[in-house]
Image (cartoon, rainbow, N blue to C red; front, side, top):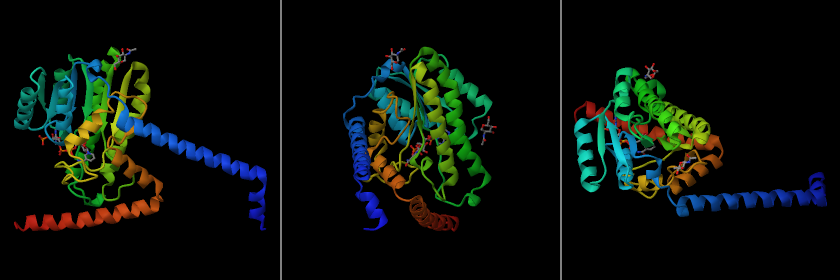
Amino acid sequence: MNAVQQIIARPEVMQAIVIVGAFTVINFGLKILTNFYKYFLRPSKNLKKLGEWAVITGATDGIGKAYAFKLAKRGLNVVLISRTEAKLNAVKAEIEEKYPSVQVKVVICDYSDFNAKLRTKVEKAVKDLDVGVLVNNVGVSYQFPKYFSELNEEEVAGLMEMNVNSTTWMTHMVLPGMMERKRGAVVNIASAAGCHTMPLLAQYSAAKGYIAMFSRGLASECAKSNVTVSCQVPFYVATKLAKMRAAFTVPTPNQFADMALKWVGHGGDVVVHPFWLHAIMGWFIESIPSSLADGQMLSMHASIRKRGLKKMAKLAKGE
Ligand SMILES: NC(=O)c1ccc[n+]([C@@H]2O[C@H](COP(=O)([O-])OP(=O)(O)OC[C@H]3O[C@@H](n4cnc5c(N)ncnc54)[C@H](OP(=O)(O)O)[C@@H]3O)[C@@H](O)[C@H]2O)c1
Ligand SMILES: *[C@@H]1O[C@H](CO)[C@@H](O)[C@H](O)[C@H]1NC(C)=O
Ligand SMILES: *[C@@H]1O[C@H](CO)[C@@H](O)[C@H](O)[C@H]1NC(C)=O
């Protein structure tokens, strides 16, 4: 027997190994059980109890639009905030037709320049409402993965303005009222990109990482006030932003919103993957060595970048 074998053969060491092993297994088992409960069995909150109104940013397409429909279905009145007036009015009409008892307000706001004047306009529209749910959904990513040095100034500013400023200022506007009323839920839509190293999406990833950290701090601050703050982090969802079609790991916005709404108002977990498959993907990325994960991400994004550049060149030639 060598020295290591001798140590392992000692009964107290054996015992320690068994105890640690059992603890690990039980811990893992409990985690799976609690997650199974949260993803598939736990009843949703009655969101009407949080307040009469829901405010959704970027509500005319993709995830935001799906969220607006689901919240209206639950009986909340909705404030839709987005850039394009015609699309806002179309979505308003669609919701009013489908859910006649629900009130719909629209606010035109271009979050690419969320300046003081625009903030005052939005604030006026929401300040007298009993807002129970705020969904900070508006956001922008890169046109396609690129080196940070390849972004132009407008893109750099837009990533901050649309992801960081919008979420921060909207929360600053709505959260005090919720805390005063002692009820409410702030739902920040970030991205799985904000939770892992994302070469060639570095600034998007950082902006979404900001939202995750912001949410964690606020959630803890607001727990006493009976207000939940959460940060929902999808991988791909089949929207215009993602330029992806629905697939096994890519839900439609409607499917995503169905799963996402189940988490609204539940405290405890702050940063969550509403879609269980995305949660497994996130867990997998965290479990493999980061050098391997980062390298894979880099080469995946590099090949999407190549395709993107080719497409741009074609467009420039007018093909
Ligand atoms: N799709 C994904 O795979 C994915 C993955 C992770 C995270 N996310 C996050 O999910 C959120 C929603 O993304 P999505 O995929 O649903 O996007 P989307 O389908 O492109 O929808 C974006 C929405 O935001 C509005 N919008 C765009 N630019 C705006 C501006 N400057 N001012 C005001 N509103 C503006 C759009 O309105 P108009 O076009 O009508 O002006 C539209 O209603 C984003 O924060 C995104 O980062 C998405
Ligand atoms: C974001 O908000 C800050 C603080 O109000 C402001 O100074 C800045 O111009 C805004 N936009 C960007 C792109 O940083
Ligand atoms: C907390 O909020 C819930 C609605 O989510 C409400 O039913 C409850 O009465 C509130 N509790 C307190 C202490 O205000």
